[in-house]
Image 1 (spheres, rainbow, N blue to C red):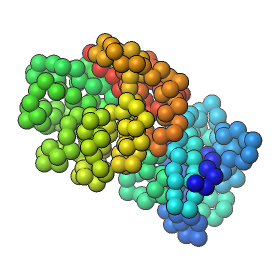
Image 2 (image 1 turned 60 degrees about the horizontal axis):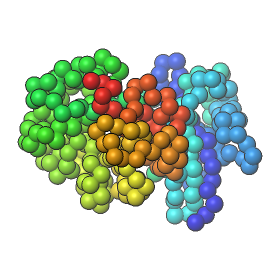
Image 3 (image 1 turned 135 degrees about the vertical axis):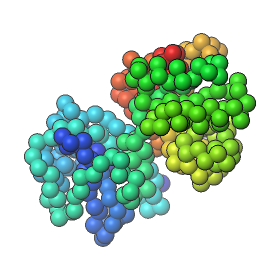
Length: 310
Protein backbone atom coordinates (compact mmCIF):
# COMPACT_ATOMS: atom_id res chain seq x y z
CA UNK A 1 0.00 0.00 0.00
CA UNK A 2 1.26 3.47 -0.88
CA UNK A 3 2.13 6.04 1.79
CA UNK A 4 -0.89 7.86 3.21
CA UNK A 5 -1.10 11.47 2.00
CA UNK A 6 -2.48 13.74 4.76
CA UNK A 7 -4.81 16.41 3.37
CA UNK A 8 -6.53 19.20 5.30
CA UNK A 9 -9.85 20.25 3.78
CA UNK A 10 -12.69 22.58 4.74
CA UNK A 11 -16.42 22.91 4.50
CA UNK A 12 -16.57 26.72 4.48
CA UNK A 13 -19.82 28.52 5.26
CA UNK A 14 -20.57 32.21 4.70
CA UNK A 15 -22.87 34.41 6.80
CA UNK A 16 -25.85 33.32 4.70
CA UNK A 17 -25.23 29.67 5.50
CA UNK A 18 -24.04 28.82 2.00
CA UNK A 19 -21.28 26.26 1.43
CA UNK A 20 -18.24 26.90 -0.78
CA UNK A 21 -17.23 24.37 -3.45
CA UNK A 22 -14.25 24.45 -5.82
CA UNK A 23 -13.99 22.73 -9.20
CA UNK A 24 -10.95 20.53 -9.77
CA UNK A 25 -8.93 21.11 -12.94
CA UNK A 26 -9.53 18.35 -15.49
CA UNK A 27 -5.78 17.64 -15.56
CA UNK A 28 -5.73 16.81 -11.84
CA UNK A 29 -6.39 13.47 -10.14
CA UNK A 30 -10.21 13.10 -10.06
CA UNK A 31 -10.33 16.20 -12.29
CA UNK A 32 -13.56 17.85 -13.41
CA UNK A 33 -15.29 17.12 -10.09
CA UNK A 34 -16.26 19.48 -7.29
CA UNK A 35 -14.31 19.39 -4.03
CA UNK A 36 -13.93 20.95 -0.61
CA UNK A 37 -10.95 23.37 -0.66
CA UNK A 38 -7.72 22.44 1.07
CA UNK A 39 -4.37 20.82 0.46
CA UNK A 40 -1.53 18.65 1.66
CA UNK A 41 -0.25 18.85 5.24
CA UNK A 42 3.51 19.30 5.14
CA UNK A 43 5.84 17.22 7.30
CA UNK A 44 5.84 18.50 10.88
CA UNK A 45 2.99 20.92 10.19
CA UNK A 46 -0.01 21.21 12.50
CA UNK A 47 -3.16 20.24 10.58
CA UNK A 48 -5.06 23.43 11.44
CA UNK A 49 -2.05 25.54 10.49
CA UNK A 50 -1.92 23.65 7.19
CA UNK A 51 -5.62 24.30 6.64
CA UNK A 52 -5.22 28.03 7.29
CA UNK A 53 -2.19 28.21 4.97
CA UNK A 54 -3.85 26.26 2.14
CA UNK A 55 -7.08 28.26 2.27
CA UNK A 56 -5.13 31.51 2.15
CA UNK A 57 -3.06 30.27 -0.79
CA UNK A 58 -6.08 28.89 -2.69
CA UNK A 59 -8.84 31.33 -1.77
CA UNK A 60 -7.24 34.45 -0.31
CA UNK A 61 -9.09 34.18 2.99
CA UNK A 62 -7.98 34.03 6.62
CA UNK A 63 -10.03 31.56 8.64
CA UNK A 64 -11.02 32.15 12.25
CA UNK A 65 -9.68 29.09 14.08
CA UNK A 66 -11.98 29.79 17.04
CA UNK A 67 -14.92 29.19 14.67
CA UNK A 68 -13.34 26.13 13.03
CA UNK A 69 -14.37 22.67 14.25
CA UNK A 70 -13.56 19.11 13.24
CA UNK A 71 -16.13 17.56 10.88
CA UNK A 72 -14.78 14.13 9.87
CA UNK A 73 -11.60 12.22 9.07
CA UNK A 74 -11.75 10.05 5.96
CA UNK A 75 -9.04 7.48 5.20
CA UNK A 76 -9.51 6.48 1.55
CA UNK A 77 -7.58 4.22 -0.79
CA UNK A 78 -7.71 4.86 -4.53
CA UNK A 79 -6.06 2.29 -6.82
CA UNK A 80 -3.12 4.66 -7.36
CA UNK A 81 -2.91 6.57 -4.06
CA UNK A 82 -4.07 6.59 -0.43
CA UNK A 83 -5.18 9.74 1.38
CA UNK A 84 -6.35 10.84 4.81
CA UNK A 85 -8.80 13.70 4.52
CA UNK A 86 -8.86 15.73 7.73
CA UNK A 87 -11.98 17.83 7.26
CA UNK A 88 -13.03 20.89 9.26
CA UNK A 89 -16.11 23.07 9.30
CA UNK A 90 -15.18 26.76 8.94
CA UNK A 91 -17.94 29.07 10.14
CA UNK A 92 -16.12 32.41 10.01
CA UNK A 93 -13.34 33.93 7.90
CA UNK A 94 -11.94 37.27 6.79
CA UNK A 95 -11.66 38.32 3.17
CA UNK A 96 -13.59 37.48 0.02
CA UNK A 97 -12.97 34.00 -1.37
CA UNK A 98 -11.81 33.79 -4.98
CA UNK A 99 -9.93 31.22 -7.02
CA UNK A 100 -6.32 32.37 -6.63
CA UNK A 101 -5.18 29.42 -8.76
CA UNK A 102 -7.83 30.03 -11.42
CA UNK A 103 -10.23 27.40 -10.07
CA UNK A 104 -13.98 28.11 -10.38
CA UNK A 105 -15.80 28.54 -7.06
CA UNK A 106 -19.47 28.29 -6.19
CA UNK A 107 -21.53 29.07 -3.09
CA UNK A 108 -24.43 26.64 -2.74
CA UNK A 109 -27.24 25.76 -0.37
CA UNK A 110 -26.78 22.56 1.65
CA UNK A 111 -30.11 21.41 0.22
CA UNK A 112 -28.48 21.33 -3.23
CA UNK A 113 -25.35 19.41 -2.18
CA UNK A 114 -26.58 16.09 -3.61
CA UNK A 115 -26.75 17.69 -7.07
CA UNK A 116 -22.94 17.98 -7.37
CA UNK A 117 -20.41 15.32 -8.32
CA UNK A 118 -17.42 14.76 -6.01
CA UNK A 119 -14.38 12.45 -5.88
CA UNK A 120 -15.25 9.13 -4.27
CA UNK A 121 -13.32 10.02 -1.10
CA UNK A 122 -15.60 13.03 -0.59
CA UNK A 123 -18.87 11.08 -0.24
CA UNK A 124 -18.50 10.70 3.57
CA UNK A 125 -17.94 14.46 3.81
CA UNK A 126 -21.18 15.11 1.91
CA UNK A 127 -22.99 12.69 4.22
CA UNK A 128 -21.45 14.25 7.34
CA UNK A 129 -22.69 17.69 6.24
CA UNK A 130 -26.22 16.44 5.60
CA UNK A 131 -26.67 14.11 8.56
CA UNK A 132 -28.04 15.55 11.84
CA UNK A 133 -25.91 15.59 15.02
CA UNK A 134 -28.48 14.05 17.42
CA UNK A 135 -30.70 11.02 16.80
CA UNK A 136 -33.43 10.03 19.26
CA UNK A 137 -34.14 6.28 19.26
CA UNK A 138 -37.61 5.22 20.32
CA UNK A 139 -37.93 2.99 23.39
CA UNK A 140 -40.47 0.16 23.51
CA UNK A 141 -43.82 1.99 23.78
CA UNK A 142 -47.54 1.32 23.41
CA UNK A 143 -48.62 1.73 19.80
CA UNK A 144 -50.38 5.05 20.45
CA UNK A 145 -47.49 6.67 22.39
CA UNK A 146 -44.95 7.23 19.61
CA UNK A 147 -46.29 10.57 18.42
CA UNK A 148 -45.90 11.94 21.95
CA UNK A 149 -42.33 10.60 22.14
CA UNK A 150 -41.40 12.29 18.86
CA UNK A 151 -42.77 15.64 20.05
CA UNK A 152 -40.83 15.30 23.31
CA UNK A 153 -37.59 14.25 21.61
CA UNK A 154 -37.74 17.16 19.17
CA UNK A 155 -38.38 19.56 22.03
CA UNK A 156 -35.21 18.22 23.69
CA UNK A 157 -33.06 18.95 20.65
CA UNK A 158 -33.19 15.77 18.56
CA UNK A 159 -32.95 16.44 14.83
CA UNK A 160 -33.76 12.87 13.74
CA UNK A 161 -35.92 10.04 15.05
CA UNK A 162 -35.10 6.34 14.70
CA UNK A 163 -38.16 4.12 14.96
CA UNK A 164 -37.03 0.96 16.73
CA UNK A 165 -40.10 -1.06 17.70
CA UNK A 166 -39.04 -4.70 17.68
CA UNK A 167 -41.94 -5.67 19.99
CA UNK A 168 -44.34 -4.89 17.12
CA UNK A 169 -44.82 -7.03 14.04
CA UNK A 170 -42.97 -5.81 10.97
CA UNK A 171 -46.26 -4.87 9.33
CA UNK A 172 -47.22 -2.75 12.35
CA UNK A 173 -43.76 -1.17 12.38
CA UNK A 174 -44.15 -0.15 8.75
CA UNK A 175 -47.65 1.22 9.36
CA UNK A 176 -46.31 3.21 12.33
CA UNK A 177 -43.39 4.54 10.30
CA UNK A 178 -45.70 5.72 7.52
CA UNK A 179 -48.02 7.30 10.09
CA UNK A 180 -45.16 9.23 11.71
CA UNK A 181 -43.91 10.27 8.27
CA UNK A 182 -47.26 11.94 7.62
CA UNK A 183 -47.41 13.54 11.07
CA UNK A 184 -43.82 14.85 10.85
CA UNK A 185 -43.23 15.32 7.09
CA UNK A 186 -40.17 17.55 7.46
CA UNK A 187 -38.34 15.39 10.02
CA UNK A 188 -35.45 13.01 9.38
CA UNK A 189 -37.18 9.71 10.19
CA UNK A 190 -35.26 6.41 10.22
CA UNK A 191 -36.73 2.91 10.34
CA UNK A 192 -34.74 0.22 12.13
CA UNK A 193 -35.68 -2.70 9.91
CA UNK A 194 -34.76 -4.78 6.88
CA UNK A 195 -33.57 -3.77 3.42
CA UNK A 196 -36.09 -6.01 1.69
CA UNK A 197 -39.15 -4.62 3.49
CA UNK A 198 -37.92 -1.04 3.17
CA UNK A 199 -37.50 -1.47 -0.57
CA UNK A 200 -40.98 -2.94 -0.88
CA UNK A 201 -42.50 -0.09 1.15
CA UNK A 202 -40.49 2.65 -0.59
CA UNK A 203 -38.79 3.77 2.62
CA UNK A 204 -35.76 5.94 1.91
CA UNK A 205 -33.98 5.95 5.29
CA UNK A 206 -33.19 2.79 7.29
CA UNK A 207 -30.87 1.49 9.98
CA UNK A 208 -29.69 -2.12 10.13
CA UNK A 209 -28.95 -4.21 13.18
CA UNK A 210 -25.41 -5.57 13.32
CA UNK A 211 -26.75 -9.01 12.29
CA UNK A 212 -28.49 -7.57 9.22
CA UNK A 213 -25.39 -5.53 8.44
CA UNK A 214 -23.24 -8.66 8.22
CA UNK A 215 -25.73 -10.22 5.79
CA UNK A 216 -25.57 -7.21 3.48
CA UNK A 217 -23.16 -7.49 0.56
CA UNK A 218 -23.34 -3.94 -0.81
CA UNK A 219 -25.27 -0.72 -0.40
CA UNK A 220 -26.76 -1.15 -3.88
CA UNK A 221 -29.12 -3.75 -2.39
CA UNK A 222 -30.97 -0.80 -0.82
CA UNK A 223 -32.94 1.48 -3.15
CA UNK A 224 -33.27 4.44 -0.75
CA UNK A 225 -31.02 7.39 0.11
CA UNK A 226 -29.79 6.78 3.67
CA UNK A 227 -28.46 3.45 4.94
CA UNK A 228 -26.90 3.09 8.38
CA UNK A 229 -26.08 0.23 10.73
CA UNK A 230 -25.16 -0.67 14.30
CA UNK A 231 -21.53 -1.66 14.91
CA UNK A 232 -20.08 -3.11 18.09
CA UNK A 233 -16.65 -4.28 16.93
CA UNK A 234 -14.04 -3.63 14.27
CA UNK A 235 -15.18 -6.52 12.06
CA UNK A 236 -18.63 -4.95 11.74
CA UNK A 237 -17.12 -1.51 11.21
CA UNK A 238 -14.91 -2.76 8.36
CA UNK A 239 -17.88 -4.57 6.79
CA UNK A 240 -19.92 -1.36 6.90
CA UNK A 241 -17.12 0.43 5.05
CA UNK A 242 -16.81 -2.30 2.41
CA UNK A 243 -20.57 -2.28 1.89
CA UNK A 244 -20.42 1.53 1.38
CA UNK A 245 -22.96 2.50 4.04
CA UNK A 246 -23.75 6.15 4.72
CA UNK A 247 -23.19 6.17 8.50
CA UNK A 248 -22.84 3.89 11.53
CA UNK A 249 -23.50 3.90 15.25
CA UNK A 250 -20.74 2.62 17.57
CA UNK A 251 -21.81 1.15 20.90
CA UNK A 252 -21.81 0.88 23.78
CA UNK A 253 -19.64 3.86 24.61
CA UNK A 254 -20.65 3.63 28.28
CA UNK A 255 -22.40 1.11 30.49
CA UNK A 256 -26.11 0.84 29.69
CA UNK A 257 -29.09 -0.53 31.59
CA UNK A 258 -30.34 -2.27 28.45
CA UNK A 259 -27.04 -4.17 27.93
CA UNK A 260 -25.49 -4.42 31.42
CA UNK A 261 -23.09 -7.24 30.47
CA UNK A 262 -21.59 -5.44 27.44
CA UNK A 263 -18.10 -4.01 27.90
CA UNK A 264 -18.14 -0.28 27.14
CA UNK A 265 -15.76 1.15 24.53
CA UNK A 266 -15.03 4.35 26.41
CA UNK A 267 -14.31 7.62 24.61
CA UNK A 268 -10.66 6.75 23.87
CA UNK A 269 -11.61 3.53 22.05
CA UNK A 270 -14.45 5.31 20.30
CA UNK A 271 -12.06 8.00 19.07
CA UNK A 272 -9.51 5.40 17.97
CA UNK A 273 -12.02 3.47 15.89
CA UNK A 274 -13.56 6.62 14.41
CA UNK A 275 -10.15 7.96 13.35
CA UNK A 276 -9.69 4.87 11.17
CA UNK A 277 -13.26 4.83 9.85
CA UNK A 278 -14.32 6.34 6.51
CA UNK A 279 -17.95 6.78 7.62
CA UNK A 280 -19.75 9.30 9.87
CA UNK A 281 -20.12 7.59 13.26
CA UNK A 282 -22.55 8.26 16.10
CA UNK A 283 -21.75 7.50 19.73
CA UNK A 284 -24.42 5.25 21.23
CA UNK A 285 -24.90 3.57 24.57
CA UNK A 286 -25.11 5.44 27.87
CA UNK A 287 -24.71 8.82 26.15
CA UNK A 288 -26.94 11.89 26.34
CA UNK A 289 -27.37 15.18 24.53
CA UNK A 290 -24.81 16.69 26.94
CA UNK A 291 -22.21 14.36 25.36
CA UNK A 292 -22.58 15.82 21.88
CA UNK A 293 -19.41 17.91 22.15
CA UNK A 294 -17.50 14.91 23.54
CA UNK A 295 -18.51 12.85 20.52
CA UNK A 296 -17.60 15.56 18.02
CA UNK A 297 -14.25 16.18 19.72
CA UNK A 298 -13.60 12.44 19.46
CA UNK A 299 -14.23 12.60 15.71
CA UNK A 300 -17.86 11.46 15.81
CA UNK A 301 -20.83 12.75 13.86
CA UNK A 302 -22.83 13.14 17.05
CA UNK A 303 -24.86 11.04 19.46
CA UNK A 304 -27.75 8.58 19.24
CA UNK A 305 -29.70 7.92 22.43
CA UNK A 306 -32.91 6.58 23.92
CA UNK A 307 -33.28 7.61 27.57
CA UNK A 308 -31.91 11.11 27.04
CA UNK A 309 -34.99 11.94 24.95
CA UNK A 310 -37.65 10.16 27.00
